[in-house]
Image 1 (cartoon, helix red, strand yellow):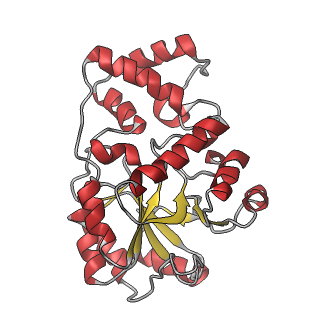
Image 2 (cartoon, rainbow, N blue to C red; image 1 turned 90 degrees about the vertical axis):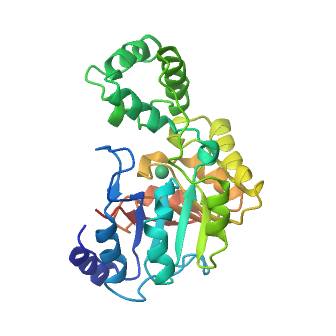
Image 3 (tube, protein in one colour; image 1 turned 45 degrees about the vertical axis):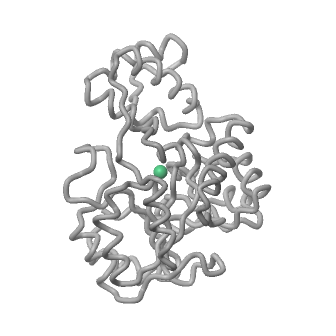
Length: 285
Ligand SMILES: [Zn+2]
């Protein structure tokens, strides 16, 4: 999305627009075609074209102005997006997967790892032994589904990667000191993006509960202030279900963020949400 398009967007949806960034970088973090990345120049244009347009979602959690969010906690943001946000005093939310805090890579990174080693077909053959997959199953695209347990896929990935000896820790994501630094900026906020970035609706109620509650608790245990805004991993409409809403309600979350672009919410999502405010976000390009 170019800045001109963003401006057009604001004219239409001025009060109803959140943006969801992942990586902001000139050299894509993983040199990876799958990673959602916006170049630093574009990012700067997108957020500084209209001065003072950006609202702070943490204020009553009401969408009075468009707001900016970052999912997955990429460390490179500290060198790219964060200085720009600070300079212009633009409020932003950062949604973190607690599993990444000590250098663990997420299951999506593990899938990318297989692609980088050309091992995806060999892994798929293994996966077919334990799971029913359609004939032209695409590991990257079709594994994000309510019908394929992310947790089971990750467990298979772990065994495969261990056998192949290609596992590694990395510093792709922010660590606890990075997050502490962010939390000191009064217009920055931290939020829970679950522990492991699973496709929540593919999990049982208990598994979802663990993902959401331990994701939150891990961050709180580091003495970090964590908001009651929750960003669902992947954020498609089918990435959450009734169980998700039940768990969010019982944990007093006030806002659920999805990533379906348009603000108009599907009726069944509105019904399930009850008192929880659900907002969609755009992924700028
Ligand atoms: Zn995410």
